[in-house]
Image 1 (cartoon, rainbow, N blue to C red):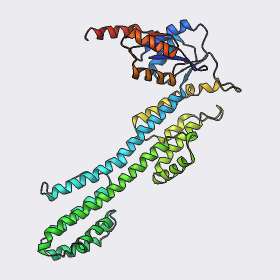
Image 2 (cartoon, rainbow, N blue to C red; image 1 turned 60 degrees about the horizontal axis):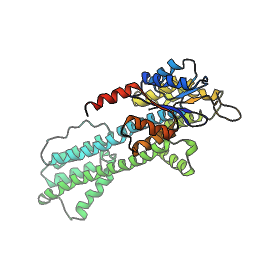
Image 3 (cartoon, rainbow, N blue to C red; image 1 turned 60 degrees about the vertical axis):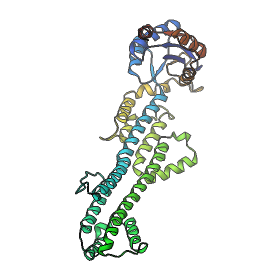
Image 4 (cartoon, rainbow, N blue to C red; image 1 turned 90 degrees about the horizontal axis):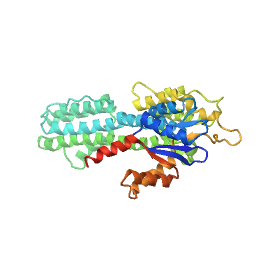
Length: 379
């Protein structure tokens, strides 16, 4: 559905039930709208749809166009969400999956399903954990209890083992084998000790994985706080955000850029900065949605801030002749009407109920009627 709204009085002017958002449907609706509104328009506000823009330019070729501020902010924040989700997946979720995969492969090896664990791991601590496992496996492959004990003592003193992040958790579980179970290195006890040493290694990587799970929880909170509008933040929001940025310092550039973007809507046109500063958050690996959002905002910068030239210094309102195509409150009304349905089984009934609810004329495009007639033949 296409809807035109008066920006000053906040009430819908007219609407059209269409088959889709296209140049032809927009042209059909605005042609009728032009017949109903005899006075010239001072400003038209639309979203970032190129199809609506092309239809609008044919009907109102000389009217100044304002790109909706709400959709400009929404465009950037949705790009942020995609980018932060990508970062979470590459830095945290894939990291957690590698530890899970490493645990499963170690069990398969001990069951004799494979001779060697061969994995292409991307993170240094998972690579180090696999190296520790291979060293343990080499030591525990000996048949002499004395040799195993002496080599384990020497291995635990090596720098490679001491720098492993899970060495403390491993040693804690390793010592319990002999203190709680009272085992000692003998041929009879080896069949009990060796599985428990492997189990101690798995307990260590499980601890590392749990730490990552906790970090992921903090990141989810940080993602929500980074996206918040500064004027909507309470003191506890700011306090939590500072804690999150200490944990993830590389998120500071994203937060700083977003705050600067919000600030551009509060200052005068003379002090406003070009939106090219948004490129600071982009890299080769950035999500395509974020790249597209930044490019779209930079290309439409003049239209996004056009409203500043129409603001009255006293009332801070747009002129009464301006028409706003996007109306979120009207969309909510339509969504509620759609959920309840209210017996809207025909296009005529739908047209009547929407017109009554929005208190404005509603027309139906010929292409929608043709589409419904075509579908009715097969039902």
